[in-house]
Length: 339
Ligand code: DAH
Image (cartoon, rainbow, N blue to C red; front, side):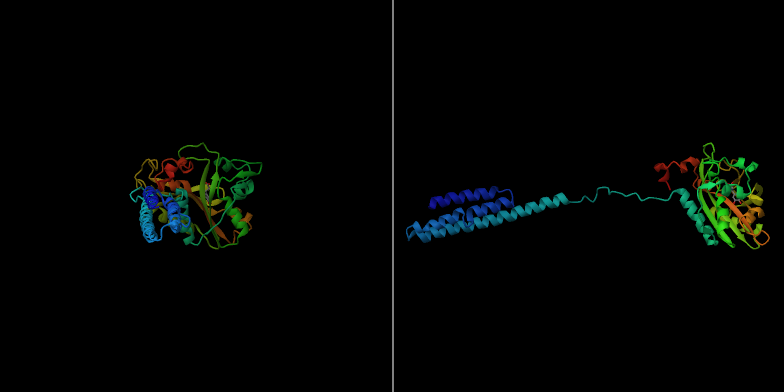
């Protein structure tokens, strides 16, 4: 029995020492020390021994049991430490690795400039209104004092969608819709896309953007027009920018002007951007034609007003020194990421 005990003990020791994980250790504990384990089985055979040998054998078995328990405990904590170390190693974060960067979206340059313009006009008391891009001939031309056979229609090559339906060629259409629905005093701007069947090149696109403005009240004069537009130009281009009003023609305003600002690129000396003239044209404007007021149900004897149409694309290309208008519409990320 003693030899048997030695054999079992030796087997157990070598099995415990080579155990690979906690599960295996637990299985070994059950195998040798459990209720039905091999050491317990020896204890159960004690009855067959000589009474004098029983205490000696009992002590040997207990010693074996104790040393195996110790060994198991030691091996268990060794394995646990090893497992923890492996786990920590696997979960280590290398803080010197380059981080994943997220790329936040940005405003399109057209929208940044538009936001600035809206701020400027809102600070002067203007509301922002919206108008449809698909318009009727009536709102886009007829009511703006451009009847069907008027030569001014040639100024704007139009995309027709049907006999009376078209893609608006100017945001001026929004003036009419505004005057039909609001009573003076009126102070609105209407930003939006406009469409013309133009040849595409560095300065022309079949879709571009305008901001229409309209002021109607009692006693509005050309001085108000000049004051508002000069203020606008100074806020957008800077206080030192010179502003020039040139007489012009639009069917829906009388008198009409075009407004130029001194070239921000060369300061007025003449360069490639201003084509040598020192000036950049930024908008058309004028006193609302009495016939236009009348056709919207506003009495021109009592009220007067001024209107203006600003080209957003030109403002954006000059501000950011963008050489080709097409870049604004191509959605090339390499271009857009620069803003
Ligand atoms: N609609 C004109 C254009 O597209 C710009 C314009 C000129 C708008 C004078 C106006 C205005 O409101 O009064 O060329």
